[in-house]
Amino acid sequence: MAPRSWNPSTEVRSILWILLGLLLCPEPGTASLPLLMDSVIQALAELERKVPVPEANHTVSVWHLSARDSEPHDPLHHFLLKGRSLKVTKLDSSALSPELQGLMKEVARHEVRGGQEYGVVLASDGSTVAVEPLLAGLEAGLQGHRVINLPLGSTATPLGAGDPFPDVGAEVSDGRATSPGLRDASPDVSSADVRAMSPGVRTTDLDVGAIFKDDRVTSPGGQTSSPDAKATSPTTVDSLLGVTMARGLGLTFLQGTQTQSRPGLGVEGCWDQLSVPRNFTLLDPEASPVTTAFLNGALDGALLGDYLSRAPEPRPPLNRLLSQYYGAGVAGDPGLRSNFRRQNGAALTSAPALTRQLWGALALLQRLQPAHPQLQGKSREQLAQAAAHATKEFTEAFLGCPAIHPRCRWGPAPYRGQPTPLRLPLGSLYVHHTYQPAPPCTTFERCAADMRSMQRYHQVDRGWDDIGYSFVVGSDGYVYEGRGWHRVGAHTLGHNSRGFGVAFVGNYTAELPAEAALRTVRDTLPGCAVRAGLLRPDYALLGHRQLVHTDCPGDALFRQLRSWPHFDATVKRRTARSASRRPKRKLPLVTMPATDLQ
Image 1 (cartoon, rainbow, N blue to C red):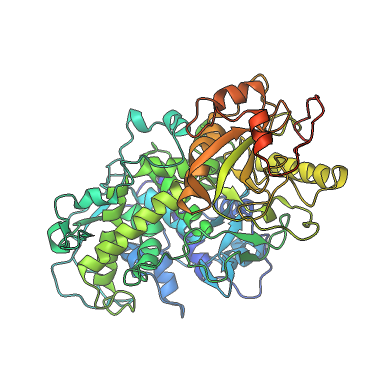
Image 2 (image 1 turned 135 degrees about the vertical axis):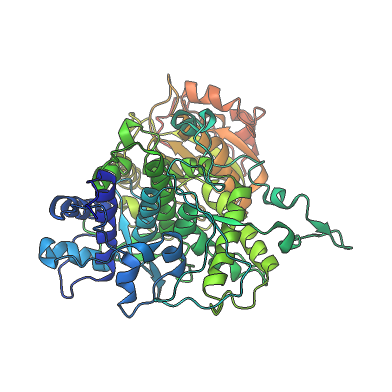
């Protein structure tokens, strides 16, 4: 048979499979690059420069390679991406640098163990990303959206590394086909609209019960139970969602179906150093594997995989795609970048569709591994309950909440003295602008520098224990933790223990912050605080100038605040001072700079 013609898309896919193969078969004793996304991009660039791929069938199956090792392979990934049909080719290790091979070893598997998280890297936007689900999404995207019929009718048998796969029925292999778990690329989900929409999902999207509207039954006690799973069981699984997030989310929440406990979803952590990161320690040592880094990697893999499946030939090199996504935006679109993964993720799929995808993935995994300790003996109803629970938590507690960089991420000086704990929930949210720094910060590097500058001013010049604000909102898509949810701040004189102080970076006397930043403070940040029991549902939103003699938060921003829900127009300066429990004292009739928070 004559060799098939060269195809650039096949070359990109081959490079990815080689990279994934190296993840699982690294050379021992090699040095390593810093655990940065830039290092992963450098690795991809080196592979794409050095590895020749002259023919379409010259590919590497990562799962066949892994089967030769002691570690068991992931049958769900192997099944959905048809790893069995790929030719296994061993790469000459001399083609790659020792540093690259060392990096591959460190990011091979995502794992949470002993309070540490492995297989993660620090991206240029300040977020931490799990590499395994990211690369899985890229691989799925290069193969196209394949909708696979679930083989649930036959008797389940364990699937070994060399066993033949069951008949999967019809598949949709056209990369432009729309999967049932993914929204079609329509005008109402364009990049421009994604940038304008809330990081949260709409209330209608959060109605996980909508998928069961015809099947839910009411018990005598008035409580609603799950439907008869047999009547509504999903019949297909989308490979993209299946290999990125369905397994991790589904199995994690399957553990809590009987106790109704909430697994630790989206736990953050701290790097040992930011310039040359090596170790990542979770803030909660009991965190589940579904950490913020895992969800970041899964979302990035799903979003980029979706992009690749729709991109025309020739598809871009992977190192260029990742450089753009973790930089200024894919193909010049600032809305399609890692800073806005939660907003874009909310537009990618609806909650009912995601529920069915998680349910279908669990059912398929149970079919492939009937002896799996978390799946053995589980009924379809239990799988459905876990999928619904996981979807609700993921959409509300992750997609519907702003991304908050923990204080360790921006390199703060130590807190001085002993912090005073807040008595939660609080009843107010106080809005500030920083005034100085005046320009909005639009990158992690700039925002982190501004945070350090403000902390230095507050500690050194003002003599305070720490940066005064509870949280600071940048124009880069992120919120930065100051004193946080649990420590009394120094932001609103006489009221620091009664509300959270949230500041926009910039001077908003004559102009407004970015729309995404406004939406964060108006909607998602307080909404998530209410859900978590940190802020009362009837909280009052106030501008700094309503409580202290100051121009903060600027005329333009304050006019905007007056139109927001929860804004309390009845609170005046005199009313606010008289409500204070401190002894009354006459304030000098001067305007305080915005940085003089108290």
